[in-house]
Image (cartoon, rainbow, N blue to C red):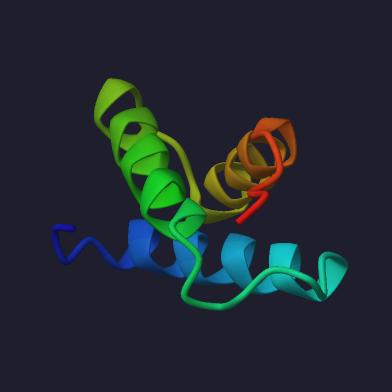
Length: 69
């Protein structure tokens, strides 16, 4: 991921919040990579601030199917 501080902060915050709501998810889960790519595309598409990007990320994670490994 490019070193965009807004993007980095949003990914970290969304992932931390998601983990706090889902104690069965491992911090190294592959969904974090999906989150990073999704938010990077969102950031490239339009100007978006950290809070809105974080909210977008949490909504995206909640829509992903559970990882049944």
